[in-house]
Length: 64
Image (cartoon, rainbow, N blue to C red; front, side, top):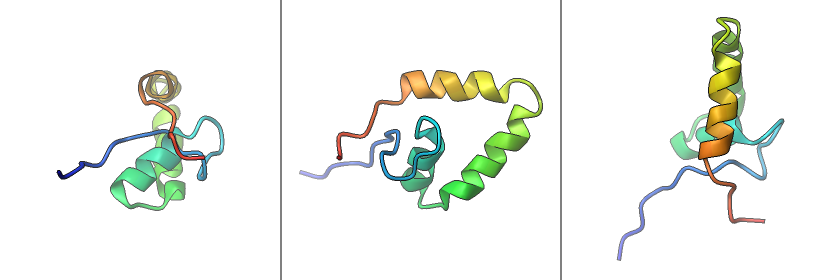
């Protein structure tokens, strides 16, 4: 049985809530790059809202 990749908030690459770290781990991209993109989007005013919605929707990683 083949398991697909799942998007989780990161426990290891976490600055605030682990959203950017989880997205970076999912796509195999450096989380710092994702954080920079979020910072640019946050300057438009809607980025913070999207970040907190993503933090609510994306589950916490089961890894410890």
